[in-house]
Length: 607
Image (cartoon, rainbow, N blue to C red):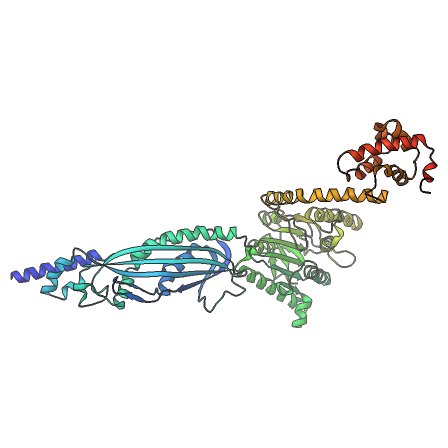
């Protein structure tokens, strides 16, 4: 009976100890980061190889990539540090042209060591003596784990590493025989093989990552976006366009002109610009006009849906051009008619919303919304809301140009082109370049369109006014958009670099120029100053007798008697001579010779 009680007590002791050794850990939610609009591929690599050190009772244990993914990669993805992140194998996938960054998580060190026994080891000897099996549940041995990882971010295009940082952590845990792997001799000398250390490593994950993960994830969420910004990386952008011409020959011609301009003048790629007209639809699949317009509506909606599914619209520019006929929809909102029977309507609000995510965007609708019909308008079946267009465009970030203000007509010119279309693209092609700087900015284009509409209105005898709503930074394809000024920090760095070279260069240049100039008029730069008075009169050519006489009377009056350019010529001749002597001698001897001798006698000297 006493033995039974003792045995029961030790068994309870063993289970209590096992309960004390177990722990439950929940990882905190990852922090939110300043998202970089980029696609990053995340690779996990480990250079750790299994290496048992029996003397030190430790072992280097390879870290499973799935564990690193669970503990570091997945939480990092949840932070949103990059807008799109995918786990990949860096050995097989180098990123490709579609990747912006390669993020590599490398395990540099993962060591597990046996640290000895704890308090429970001694009472557990009794449990082992009575039951042997009961001691397996007692966490009486201490193991430690040390981990070091490195996170590097590389620009996929330039292959430049823009961020690299190492993180480390250590943890202890008390393990039982099941957790560190069963070994009958370990109770006496603590001898373990690599299998024991691998089993121990699995159970050390919780305390180890409890130390590692919070500080690593928080640092990465803050530091990676900052590193991307400091590197000067700019997201690659594309120009996208949707060009539509539905509603007659004039609308088709307008769309074709718009397409030619953005491809040939604005540099758009054909594969990124979609042209939808009744002609293009009929060329692929013959149909009557009503069927072509119905199909055009479906194609427009399909293109808008594709834009909504883009990964990074905030990188790109987007342009929608529609030449058609407008009216008012059943709910009083402005719509573009893409079908003869009005069963296919494209709301202007849907076009505006499709452009919101893009970096820069523009919407041109060469149509009218006159409820009475006429021009490029279709008679409205119901009562339109006069302020509906204003409400639709109230908060749009796009530059918007519409062929007519609400209630007015949008008309075509004598060539069959829409007036708005003709003025916009003619203006961008150079007609609006008022200052002749070979670029058209928004103020020039807006002024050109407004003034030309007045001329068309007078010529046609109609009230014609376009609806113009520029964005905060006005933009449409082909428009000159001024670049933001460069930071002033670069200018002080450039200025100091010039002056150090200047002192060594400018004196050399200035000394050469005066030396060359006297050589030309005198013909003998090495001669004495007595020869110089003969040459200056030959140089001036007009007044050889006046200048010597005046110089002989009052040398100081020279600058006032002669034109302003002549006093500047003589100093250029003289600085080539060292000192002030050349300046004094020409002033004395020329003054005597012209005064004593006639003007004709200098011609006798050469003889």
